[in-house]
Every structure is written in C-alpha cells, then in structure tokens.
Image 1 (tube, rainbow, N blue to C red):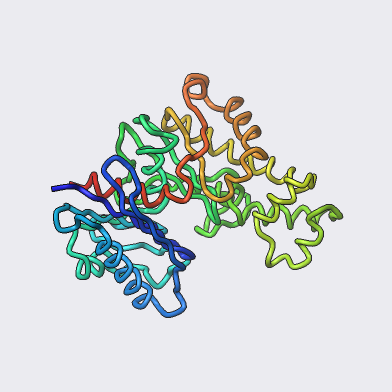
Image 2 (image 1 turned 120 degrees about the vertical axis):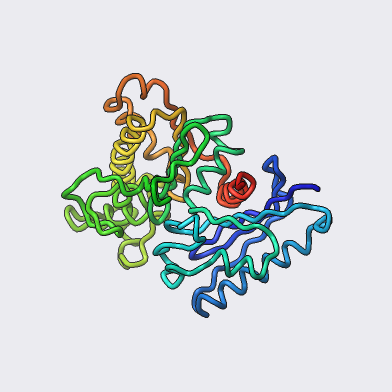
Length: 320
C-alpha cells in the first residue's frame, strides 16, 4: 500500500489543504476562504466536503493508505480531539472536531496546533530540516511557536506546552489577549506593530509616509507599516527595530531554556525581516549564555504558506 498524507491548515480567514508524499512533496493543494458567518456546522461541513473532493481526485486512492492531519488555531486536547478556546473560531471551543470529521472521512485523522504544525513543517522539509533540537516562532496577528526536543514536540502535561508568544518580557507592559501583561505577542506580532506605531504618533506626532495610513487608525495594518518602512519612513523603521529588540529577548529565553540548534522565524510579519532581524540577533548575542548563543542559528522559514499543511501531514505520518 502506498502511503499518502493530507495536511489541512484551518485558519480563521483561509483554509488550505494538500496531498503530500511521505517525503514532503506536495502533489496537489487547494485553498478557500473560511466562512464563519454561516455558523460552525456549515463551516465544518464545507471543510469535510472539500476534503472528500480532494481525496476523490487522488488517482490511486483505492490502493493507498491515507492519513489526515489538521492544524487548528489555539490549544488542542490531543487525546480527545477537541479545540480549547481557538482565537477567531470561538464557537469551536470544546467542539469534538476529530469525531465530527472521522464520521465523514474513513481515514485516521490527527489534530495539531497550527503553530506546532508550522514548526514541524519547517523541521521536516524547511529551514530546520535535519535538526533534532529546534524552535519555531510564527509572527502573525499574534505570536505562536513550538519547541522540538530530541526530535519530539514538547507538549507539557496537558498538551498545551510551547506557547512561545506568551513568555512575559515586561510584567508592566501592555495587556495581552491571553489576559497577561507584557507577553512577547504584544511586541512582536502584527497587532503589536500597529499598537506601537499608533502610540508613537500619539506621543510625538508624525508627518511622514504613515500620515495617510493612520487617518483611520482602525484600518492600519502591519503590512502598511512595512510598506512605509520600505519607502524610508523613519517611524515605521524605528518601530520594527523596537519589535526586533523585544523579539531578541524572546530568542534569549528560548536559547537559554532549550539550547536549540536552530530557531526558525516565519509568519506574515517576518516579511519585514530586514528591518528587525539585526536588532533581534544583537540582543540574542548580548544576553544569551555564551555556549548556547554560539550554538544557535536564527533562520528565516522556507516553506511559506505551505508550512502548516506540511506540518499537519507530518503529524499524521508520525501518529502511531
């Protein structure tokens, strides 16, 4: 029997699926808009329908062993196959997602946290391939990540370990979505970049290239801040540098705690790589313990939007 894997990356905005070989080659992929407006059941029925269609397109499906992995936002109870308070998909809290899908898809199905899936994908065929000890950090609307120790994902007693974005960097800092203060996420995410820009403008005024974008502050995005930085806007560049310094502190903690070979950084905000990575690496070199800092490499993710489906497929392949 030929083994084929299906990886699914279920986000609050887009859902991606791919048919993948055991060697990490993507044979087919689809993407569609995640429509939460019709309710959870309709959204999940569409996911199951599109998954069934994708399976039907596999030429040798009747002569293949098929395993399915799905990366979902938020903590996952792996034993029960349920999501725990997923951001942007709050109606799925405590929903028996694995059972729901397995009743419609006659193949083994594994759930995985989406940030862990990113980390596994980069370790399988991306920037951390070949490493046994590495960390993944995703810079998006929030900050996610995963920690791999001796080839195994670090999960903790309840399976919620590796919440990289919620290490506390400043206990008096801004309130985070998790309820804490001063987490890495409030400084190194897209929402963190936006907050820092608006606070700087309120504090000191601004007449640069960001002036037009900030007329409607509710619509300002980190992508617009990045574009302004590329056009030479001093404030935009300064905010990314500040973000880099806080990210560097996060990298110090990961390096000192886990002594990784590599730390892989991805996510949409990593598009501003050239504006923050020097500061992040400088802080890492200044503050991390010498042996660990000389060992670790901080690298940019290589799999792009495919990291999630690759990592979900890998999780399915490794499931006993």
